[in-house]
Amino acid sequence: MRVLVVGSGGREHALAWKIASSDAVEALHAVPGSDAMQGLATCHPDVKAMDLDAIVALARSEASDLVVVGPEDPLAAGLSDRLREAGIAVFGPSAAAAQLEASKAFAKEFMARHAIPTADFRVFEDFDAARAHVLALDGVCVVKADGLAAGKGVAVCGEPEGAVAALTEMMRDRRFGEAGARVVIEERLEGEEASYYAITDGTRVTTLAAAQDHKRALDGDRGENTGGMGAVAPAPVVTEAVEKRLLEEVVHPAIAGMVADGTPYTGVLYVGLMIDRTGAPRVVEFNVRFGDPETQPLMLGLDGDLVPLLHGAATGGLGNATPVGFRGTAVCVVLASDGYPRSYPTGRAISGLAAAADQPGVEVFHAGTRRAANGGFETAGGRVLGVTARGENIEEARRRAYAACDEIHFEGMHLRRDIAERVLAG
Ligand code: AMP
Ligand code: GLY
Image 1: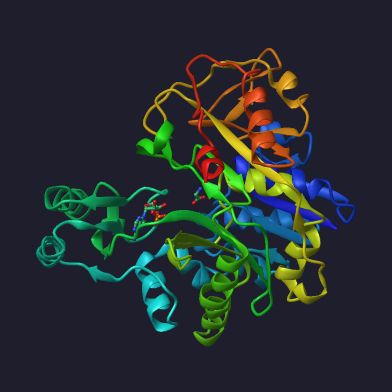
Image 2: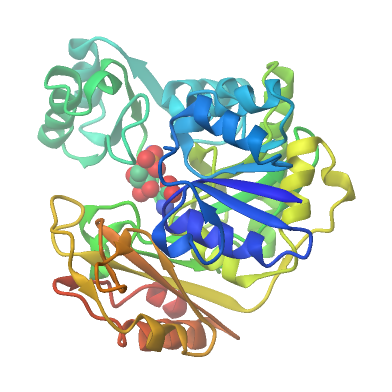
């Protein structure tokens, strides 16, 4: 099988690493890919992930049997539709189905229509009406800009001033651009967060392990929200009993609901969850692609070939693919540039990559790096590396991941020292 991966980050590096290990794969390409992915895939740095015409042309000229789309933007822009029209199998939903992530209002209305448990919500386009609503809630709410805001555009509020300030920033100052024209105001959920991955061909579903991200920049869940500073899979909070409820109350109704609404969903449905003390799952968000950095531990721990699942989901043949289990536990620690998630320097030399990768059970996935003039790697992004380790249990996976992190150095390197610590403490 000839496979093309779309994207260039740590998630795509991990996907390419897993796909390349499949006996079914004879050629692997990536657009644009990254310098670090060169050893796994033929990269096409001139083709950007949002250049739909060029990607369709490349998939044609490379006779791709399967295109795997990493990020959400090209999906929302219709990349899957374009590839399908060209007769090319693609892992990733249509633009219509990608609304589940691209529009928070669409997602909330979808969940209400199909009785999928989520926070109570209201949608506002008028600032004064929105302000009156948050004041009525005494400011205890979550304010979200509609539309894609690069993981930002979400304010978890606890008092009136903060909630009104968040509304003003989004609706009046347009901090997130047009995404702030409509806001969703939600009930604030309490509990433990996790993400869950359902692969589907539109009707059949196979699930991967649950994962847990660490979104705040600093230890102890302090500091700003980031794209994710580390992740663990499986997430112990998703017990067998929680998983059963999750499938019955969320995953199956969502897949059936998309069919009923005339926009069948294919690809991976990422369910962002809050799980309360009674084990009741409620949906915080749907994403229409794999999580980053959750994909890094997910790919490292999967115990079997992922490619038949990806291809089955893309072609309606998921029923013929063998489900893939998970071995032990995997932990990913993100090494970031100082200043991330705001501004940060780039071009700093990275040392110790080979020594880190030599540690048992470790893979180092590159999120924001490039080849330096001397042949080594240097930093090129906010999140630089995802140092990922597998172990028999969380303790071993953590120990290995941090031992590998200690081999790596670049000026201003920032990491959290408590990834997967809370789940360990129970
Ligand atoms: P989102 O972009 O929707 O994933 O939101 C970003 C983060 O905000 C989530 O990972 C949660 O930590 C938090 N969040 C979003 N919605 C809620 C909610 N209704 N209640 C509590 N926390 C939330
Ligand atoms: N790590 C969160 C996300 O991928 O949305």
